[in-house]
Image (cartoon, rainbow, N blue to C red; front, side, top):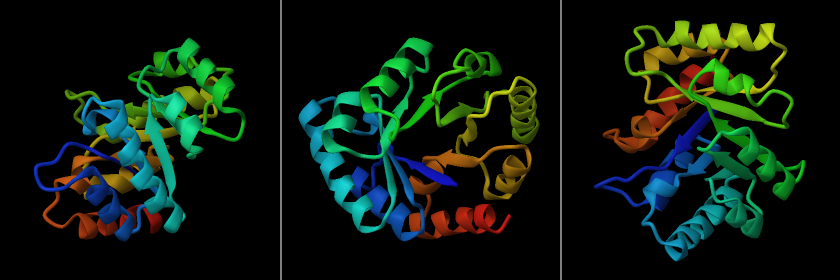
Length: 201
């Protein structure tokens, strides 16, 4: 599974970034609030354009943090950068069982704090000082399994394409990237290169 998280870019609008990721084969677009002007109307307009793009291409669409907008537009779900137990539980109650709910966690302890809640996936960024991302995610995956926590684990970061297979082997269900696509010389080709590894693992 490949998730593309929109970002601020000097070259492309958020809609253009998403379009190129989808053209490259990505079928999971996450609208990041920080990639859009801090204006509710602008966020809603961008979200509307991405709804059409994702609908036409049978792609999942996730909006960060804004549960109200997710509910209003009836997109697939929400990703919560406040991954606290209270915030996650409130989002699930508001959006219902059908919605995808993901949460940002920075450690196994953060993941364990959500145990028992209806969470679809946890996205964990690798700490900057980590020498081996695969070892980091393998450790979290083992702890989740040993503690009967069955959320999907998503590696979050702009990893080299050559590292992607190692992340899947470490127990990750997928990878969430941003600059690896949006900042690439050819975002469409970059998306295809990542998917070549993830799909043919």
